[in-house]
Length: 445
Image (cartoon, rainbow, N blue to C red; front, side):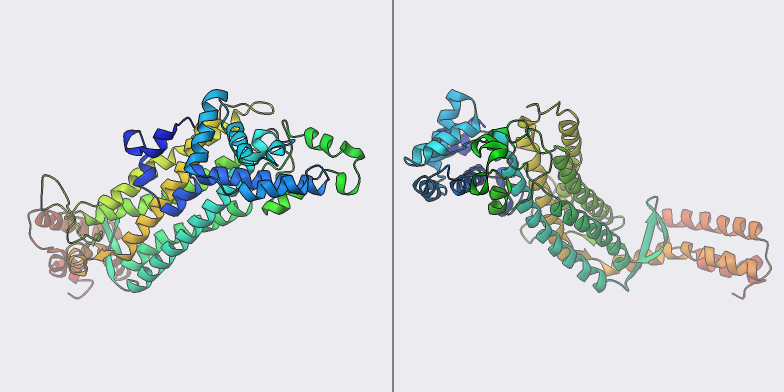
């Protein structure tokens, strides 16, 4: 990440992602912030130094110096690290040097025995866990809001649509239950993925732990002097993959982003359905609309479903991100190539930021959902009679009528009724069937 101090001080003069200010919660932005990344790096360096102090490699004074300055990640310290990075072209080593400058006693042992990804990948695993915990809490809020609406409208009949055509009655609550069911599956997927998150551990340049074993006197080390990556992992409260190369398996990134894409998929459907149901020809549902909200710059009367459209727009973007992670995992040649590094800086953070925004907007839409019961009743009166024709057909056949003949008769009346509706008239189907002698000879009108 190449920036200079003026970039940090004058964001309006430089490009910023919409996720920097427009989308996602401050809490999710904080997790993926430059400051939090560097704080996590320093936390890992301190944990590594603690383990090496236990092995007799790092002194108490050196460790205390690192601990005292680990939280001093400020605009000035970041600017200093970026200044160093412009010269050396290595972001993590630039932070090592900036941190070391703050630590006159312990600075010389920062990153001892480690390779960059021992720090970066473990920090990423910690960020993945924190971000997934934040999304899990947001999903719980969404699930509660959906469950409340399912109960509220469980007995409110409305027309169901198949092929975007009126079909048979359902209830508003039952339709909402479909979205709830999808989100519950997403919640379980997120839980399982979160539980499986692991770091790289501390295995060095190609995963063999050679540098650490050298510091701990290799396999000959005894007692406190022997290297074991659990010394550091326990301090960080994390697990590591049993086998790793220079990085943790990039399949983990794909699995994580796939889960986020699944959440976006579920809420895309909800938002798209809401957009359809808000259209005036149906008019049964609507987004909450503020008293000062502007629907259109040109047409003052508009009440556009802008939040549902935002969900669908961000979800469409998120849907494409698993492919990038797939390629990163598949193309990680031998023990590691660097062709995943640049896109990981963008994709993983934006996948979480996008999912966060989608979930939170969906929760607001569900909580403030406007259900137009009068319009639902009008649509039932208009289209409900068609749904009754299947039951009528069954009753006629049970009374002795020929199924094929009755099907054709009902079809003819139905097409005639559709023509009347299309001309703006009320649905005449029930009256037409009740007055047809071919029907009434089997069933009294």
